[in-house]
Amino acid sequence: MKNLIRFIVFSILCTNAYGQTTTVNLRSLKTHYGTQSSGTGYSGNAGSHSEFDNMVNLNSSGTTLHVDTTVDITSYQGPRGNRHTPSQLWNPPRWNEGGSPDDRYAIIYTGWFKPNKSGTYSFRTYTDDSHEFMIKGIGKTNDIVTKYYGWNTWAYGTATLDKTQWYEFELRIQNYGGMGAANFEYRLPAGGSYNQLSPNHPFAEWTATDPNAVPITATGYIKGAEEVGIAGQTVYLKTQNKNQVGFSYTTQATTTTDSNGYYSFNTTLDYNDYDFTIDINPSVSTLTTSDINWFTNRLFIGTFSSKDYWRMDVNNTGTFSVSDIYLMHQKRHGNITNFTGGGQEIWSTNYWQQPYIWNAVKVDTDDKTINNGYGAWSLFDLLNGNQTTYYLLRAGHKN
Image (cartoon, rainbow, N blue to C red; front, side):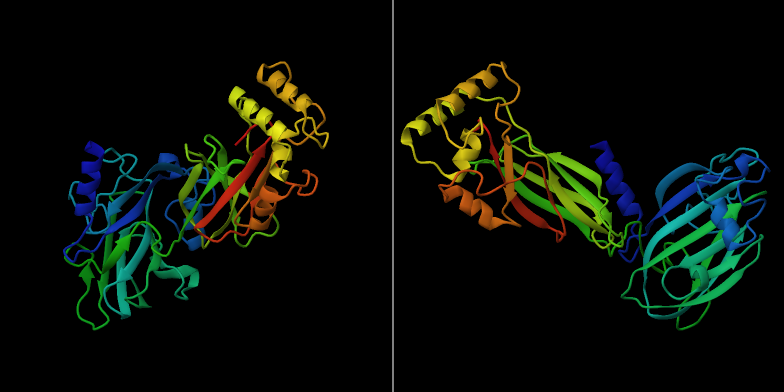
């Protein structure tokens, strides 16, 4: 409950007077080993875009992560005001905050914004020390709108923006020595004076998560021969990048079926970026006396479907007899680990991709060689929100 209250309070604090969200991501880094030493590919103040890239790269020696968090960009943790403590203005989280020296750090704001008006905005930015303000996908070199490599100097730039569109941005600031500072100001397309980003001048709606993302979701069931759900079966969601050649899927999430055989995936992975598969690798359970007794009664009926052969012909002779019943009891008691005859113990198909197979197996009176099935199964080329039902036939199991 306390965590819920904190979340609600934070959400309220990160909503401006216009009812817009103002939350963005903030990454705080310690740079230069926290001393005056050079890191990999950088030294002193960032003097170029490539040097800045090296400075904020966690793979560069000399750079380490202090914290990843979210902040209200219009607050004093955002690029608002002049110098930080003791002036109590710009005050982002820093590795040696309040210490001496309070420098050798980098602050990176990232996220998305949707401007309040359409047209050509003017921007000016001022930091101590170097900084770059970038808007992705608007045709700027390295996406940079304003930049200055040094300290305490205003940088100017323009960008033509559409109020109906979300834009991805990055503002990175580094401080090598002395007290840091950050100012982000904008001028509306209609002109006038520059406005410092603040609760009264939010410039835009802001968000820390991609508003254009389409989260990958998938649901379905795993059912047995009697079309009743099977609990406890493991299901895998795997992905690979959409532009990747070939098949090289990586497991991103796993779940197990509930008492109804139901599974569900609700991820934060963007369907625009990934192809995904749903994989199953079904398992057998301990055989039960009730199932074996049911098979014994079936033996006296004498009419079998293909699915009966898969679950009842455990010794893989192509017929169903007392020998199969005997082997079921042997396995139930632990006297054997696997059924003799080398038969496949699990058969599976799915109704989304191959409904004709399950329909045939349910009613055909042929033996199991007519409709070969699979043990494990991978469903490729899925549309987002895929729903499917897998059917399993397990040797020695009624369902």
